[in-house]
Length: 272
View 1 (spheres, rainbow, N blue to C red):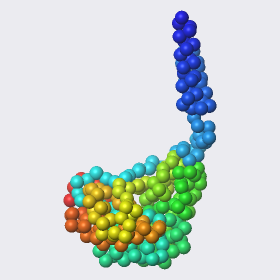
View 2: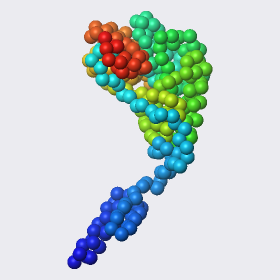
View 3: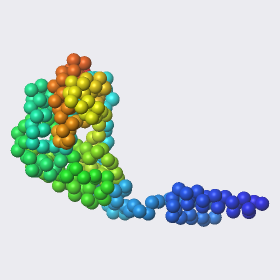
């Protein structure tokens, strides 16, 4: 009977391994049963899902931080713009920010920064730049070497165009994979996602309504995502930007760059 129970147990483990891992292999040594479950379609080291290069030396320094926002009681908000620079759109944003004396963080696409360097040259004083990839392709689908090469190329283009080396990374669409983490660590970036995103599609032709929605949703420590490139519907948010700024200031909010938000949150009392 005991032998039958043992055989049933082994069969159950085998069935479970097959269900969970498809072609999984089961190793049995004495009474120890270990199921090795892996998706063989993905490489085990250096691929998009892996944050390591397998047995190779990891040139990543101390690690990488990922942030969506910060916990703070102070009314601080970081305004960010992705995908630029782009003619017409980016100058419109910069003009509005200059008029209202609002700092922001721009996550630039390297290829666009190189092609439209004149749009941002000498206009980013008081603002911050971050890396948003070379050509807005999905970094989470790239292997570790390709993701690093993409971000390094973008890093150099942004530095040349703006005169400032980016220290922040926002991957396109917020897609994270192990290879993205590995590349970010090699470049000593902080990974910045967002707390709240513009919802232009919900307010067609209603800039004021969109502004009111965003003002109502912001909380202390919010990283707010907008775009200075894209389909025309996104212009709703940009046209409503003055109302959004005024509305948040009426609620007592102060605009800061992402790095300033992170710095103030890390130091007790500094944001007061």
